[in-house]
Every structure is written in structure tokens, then in C-alpha cells.
Image 1: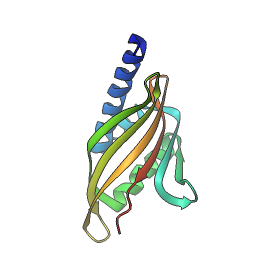
Image 2: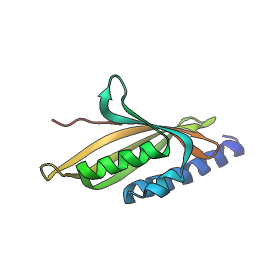
Image 3: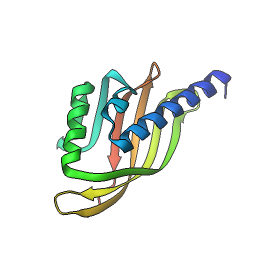
Image 4: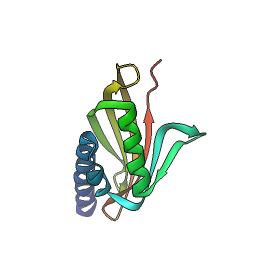
Length: 136
């Protein structure tokens, strides 16, 4: 791997750590500091086939996090692992994780594994495409 690729991957890892910590704290401003102005978040579920729900830009990210706070609490992301799609392309990243929390409606716990596919552009996250296990 070239020194440039190594440096780019290190910078992307730092960005993802900051983004993940902000997500765990539900720190909207911290999250927004890690994403581009035209950030696209493809959520794991939603009303529109085949994508679920697509959020675009800061205000829609704020809305998504506010809606999540009404549905779940004590959300934690752990067991994270990061994989660069290609050694030569640090801008395409696959992250795996475990998510736990409490469903507010019935006070039940959830515990799922998921995958996020990120695109990094100009040192910021340009997109996050999320996939979660569905537990019946």
C-alpha cells in the first residue's frame, strides 16, 4: 500500500471514530461536523422501496435523529469493524457493527448487527447506506 493510501485510510478512520462517537452520544452537531453539506443517509427501513428512507442534508439528518429519539432510547453501537472497499480507494468504506437499545413503545430491548457503506469525499462523509438484521 502506498504512503498516500495509508495516510488517507488513517484520516478516514479518524473521521469514522469521531462520527461514531457523536452517533453514540446522539450529538447532532458532532455528526454534522463529520458530513458534507449534501450528505445522503439511506436508512435501513422506511416507506420507499427499494431504499427504505433517504435523508439528504443537515435538516433531514436532524429530523431523523429527533424521530429516532422518540422511538428508541439507550442506543449503543459496539463491536465495530472497518473495511476499506479497495486498498487503493479509501473513500469507499464498509463498517460492521452491533446496535443495542430499548424500543420506547413497549420497553423491549433490541440487539442487532448491521452494515454501513460509507463514501468519504474531501475529508468528510458524503453518504451512509445502512443495513440492519431484522429480528422477528
